[in-house]
Length: 413
Image (cartoon, rainbow, N blue to C red; front, side):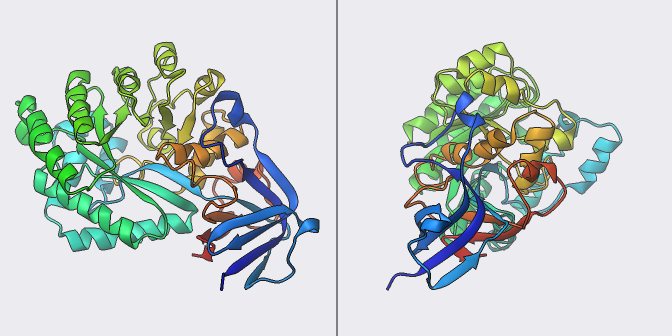
């Protein structure tokens, strides 16, 4: 017997896409298909059918939800997080308030190195329990697919430990979890004067073991001023490709690093951060399959310039938004706040921002065919709003919790 859930009298069913659409770019991001006064039928955890409520084929189901005056939209797809970590870094937050920069904190052993020190001393089981709690929290906030990166290990054993935790999250999670190997997140203190040795450790030891245990979908590098150069990044991505790890890049957060152009050259699934993006970078991304993933809460928290989302969209790029949830530069996985930041600080239209958080976030994890839209046969990973909401009001009420209920595979979380 199949299990059916029926949503009736939905005020606005938003985010509808055909099965063939797995991403949106440029002008396509400006519109969003919706049905007012709609129904949606869920069968065995997947979207079975939807349409005008007057044409609802059923009166009864195993569960019927009255969505009068409420919106129903696809769950968010968060393609950039670091939710496996041992502890928070609120002390460094105060250091920044006193005037220290992110790079200055890193140089004295803080930042990523601080997180690495804590993680190396924490057991796999404890890391898993903490990360699983964070995962459930972001699901409650509307996330229906997620990518999780390593990068707070910075030794072979600790990077593998992180990735094993991510594998356990995959097994325990009701939503898809993508794993990203980010051993090239920072140079450990003992390698600051011998960078080549750390690159060799990543390429000759870490990547073969990560691939050998099947622990990651992607390989990533923090390609930016003060971190990994274009040449170092290319060596790591090239090695990763030999072992079947698809490339991604932390690019142009702090400077015009060349990371965006390098990502396009290597057919990266996405390049992420992108605060420093100008005409040359936009030209490189134009016509490529690489998703431009913007992380506005990092700019908000660190006081950095925001990525030029308006220019990117107006030049035809596929733009995604993600949370960058991590203990140092974005200590929140609240994607509704990201929606507001996209509109308020980067002048994205509400439809553009919602598309960037859903179907394009899915595309940045290669999940566009299965997640990120209201489409028949996709898992019923849905957000149901409180009463009185519409597309324009979602980013407008930036400090309100306007989510009434989250469904994952048709089940209330």
